[in-house]
Length: 280
Image 1: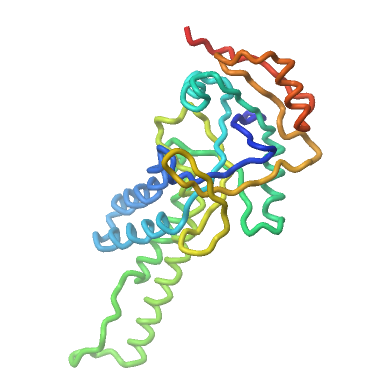
Image 2 (image 1 turned 120 degrees about the vertical axis):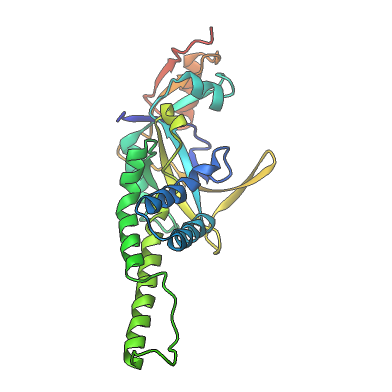
């Protein structure tokens, strides 16, 4: 992979904003859809497939993804058009190793939640590879009786009370283990994306927000939405955070002005270039 990822920066900090409010928020549903297809392929009972869908749908409601989206492609025409005010903006290149170090450090701070640096997966095969180990655990717990009902003893029941209690305890244990296995899926909720976006070669700084608790976050207004986000400062480490700036095809700012601006904010020795993309 490239050593530089491109995105934007605000006030010497990065903002990890809600991904469920973006235009492609349905990407969070891909895990649920993929799990369903794997279960149907294995010919699991329809009732088990439906209950499994309910479990993964619960995950989607419970967790929000807060993401800072980056691309391996710093000078892509579709990116300029879609994300940089029709080519008038600037593409900021962050050091991959710096972001990896910052992510590792974020988990050791006093903040309740840090973030990870992960590559987005677009290909079906890669998505299955991410999901299948957890799915296999879930399937095994279903076979152990996770979705069975607790059957009361009837007059014609030949089982002893001890046998009934053992069977019910087995169902309870399988249910508990299945729930814990399902929770293993939530880190992948916002790492799967439709193949149509493949050219973006996206990576994400990703933090998770639990919707149904008092999990900490900030809020900002944007257009017709209030958006949850977390802010992380670009800390001073042994390596520079920003290594490159690419001016958009329609950006006319002189390189010297960009250089002075960067130095004024503490960013030195940044490679400044103009886009090779053409709107012609």
